[in-house]
Image (tube, helix red, strand yellow):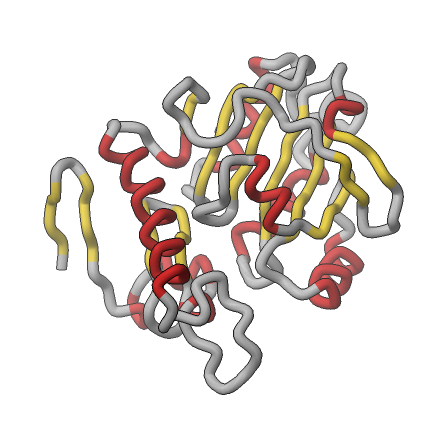
Length: 236
């Protein structure tokens, strides 16, 4: 079932027959997508008797529902402005910071660094989760980028540290891997959906923000990097 509401196409699908749900590994209700961006998944609302770790739990509290409403408004506002979520050019009205925030971070090995220290090369910051297949696919894909020409920071969210470490050991993604928290997400203007990629130029200015996992996501990243003077190295 589909309907049009002030420029936003709303679609209700049977998750058992939804290519988008299949792409993200979503197998239950409720789940919310805006275009190709996964805004909320079942685990965000329900714990099924386990620990309450979902970002909108406890759902019975008004503050949890307000967080959900704020995330939905943020994503819908982008679409109502006529912007494609998969190719958001940064502007004063776009989400996230105009520059990479000067955060002090530690990678999974405990080594400290600052995003400001990466100046001199274009930088990709990917927010990803262990349960998100498109996120993991992008981590794998970024291995083909030339580390001499682009810096990569992969920030894990909505995942346990044990799952993050296990995934990193399996994939061995390039660049630095960080275990993210609410402070890091807030510094990037809040995280309404995954995957989310921020691409900055060699001076730290955010050149592009990408939410979701459209089929041409990696081609869009490549073309953006090429415009910043950092094309992909090869087709490995």
